[in-house]
Image 1 (spheres, rainbow over the protein chains, first blue to last red):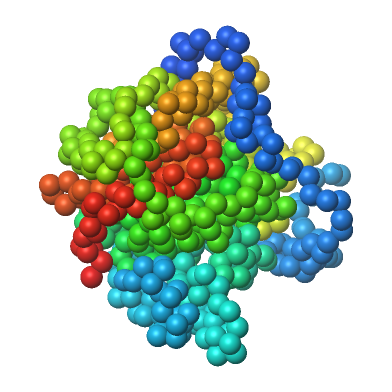
Image 2: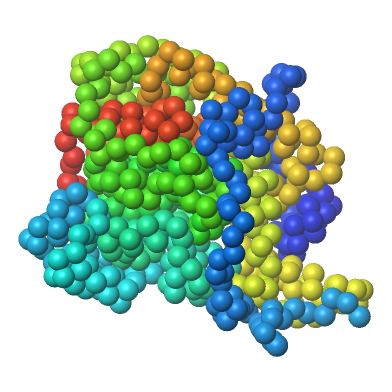
Amino acid sequence: MDRAQIRHVASLAELELTDDEEERLAAEIGRVVAYVSELDAIDTSDVPPTAHVTAGAGSSLEALVSPLRPDEPEPGLAHDDALAGAPRAAHGGFSVPTFVE
Amino acid sequence: MDTVVAVAESVRKGDKRAVEIAETALARIEQRDRDLHAFLAVAKDELLAQARAVDEKRARGEALGPLAGVPVALKDALCMRGVPTTSGSKMLEGWRPPYDATVVAKLRAADALIPGKTNLDEFAMGSSTESSAYGPTKNPVDPERTPGGSSGGSAVAVAAGMSPASLGSDTGGSIRQPAAFTGVVGLKPTYGRVSRFGLVAFASSLDQIGPFATDVRGAARVLSVIAGHDPKDMTSLTAELHDYEAACGASVRGLRLGVPEEYFAEGLDPDVEASIRGAIKALEADGCSVRPVRLPHTRHAVATYYVIATAEASSNLARFDGVRYGLRVEPKAVSDQSQGSALRAMYGATRDAGFGPEVKRRILLGTFVLSAGYYDAYYLKAQKVRTLIRRDFEAAFADVDAVVCPTAPTPPFKLGEKTSDPLSMYLSDVYTLPASLAGLPALSVPCAPTPSGLPVGLQIVTRPLAETTALTLAAAVEASHPRRDEGRR
């Protein structure tokens, strides 16, 4: 993994790295990527993926999940509580830097 | 330190007031935690208020809950209304959640006392608590050694007698490994058995909350309180609860144990191996049958886990953007004047300042394996190998009731020993990752310590929702391995 690749991935992840971090992380992540590449050698033809143990691939738990709760209104987080942890709030909302002209 | 059950009974009978227990816990934390650093926040006022409420409830003649007056410390990844929750990160320094996690609400309803929030690796990413932004926790058995992680603070709170029980979360071993390293009981329930609502997310298909306790029955009682379906967590299971405490006294006679040869391979410390084999022999003497089983994909668990967990983490941690809660860093200058650049510069500055090195590594690795051109080769491939790891266990459980093996390949390692080499830290999780990937219940119970006195944990893995079998076996292991009291004075 080279620095250009790390810079691209960091940009996707909205991480701004210093030059030192870029260099160090390129080397460290390169080693981990090389290690996880051992998975290439495993034959997975006809093997379905597992995204979640409660679903698919013959899961015995599949019948035990009920992903939807009844569609009934109930009180949620109060407006002031929701804003209380915001680093910046204004006019009853979260405040962000300008992003449209 | 009394056990969970002993404390609850003494309060129920009126032998002790909850306020006395709270004061003793606070004194103990004061005395021990300066050196150990298990706690990030001690919620003294809340604790005493909870204790007074329990005493008043009893005075009114009302029935008390199953954890009446029992201190249960919380890993600082669990939200408790109004009490600072950092998840071990500068990103959340000073943040006070506006709500309780479901497990916290359940503890309150059971009349438990919550002494505070315990240290962890930053966002639960680590195996030693050393990635915590607030400094490492030390092992009470030997302060030069790690208590394990990521739930190291919760393990030490119990091991050092500051709280008879605590809650942790386990994504790849974060309850079991610190339990083994500190000589306490730690249980990761079946994925979905305990609601994750209010747990700061790391890897959502793997995260599971569970108890630490001084003894097996204590862990069972806490599990019986926190388990159950929660409409607020779409992955929580609707299955009925079992009688976990009754399971602790059941006979092990006739239970079939599988010993996976892959867990006794190169890299296993010989002292750990001797202790584990001794514990399995003792179970055999108690009437269990023992046979070898094969879990051939075990050796790919580390690679599989570090692809899947980091991919999920990179997505989960996208929420830390300096807008709704937590840290915000305004960039010094925005050179690029294009549309949206000021917002992106704020994201970048905030996330660079708020996340520590291990978290950045994992976000970058996770983003990489999900990125265009690499998704199939890494992420989808790892999900397929995850299926093979699940199938290994399904095949084994056709013939046995439990798989027994070491929780960790070594005794607790020295602080600083693995911090410079992320991969060596990842490899220390090799024995706990497979059960996480398969979503299975798994428990670590202390067995004989090494000749130099370091704790060793036996891991017991069972079928989905068979926590009872694990508890039955663990109680038998506990009975044949009387607890030492070192590090608990």
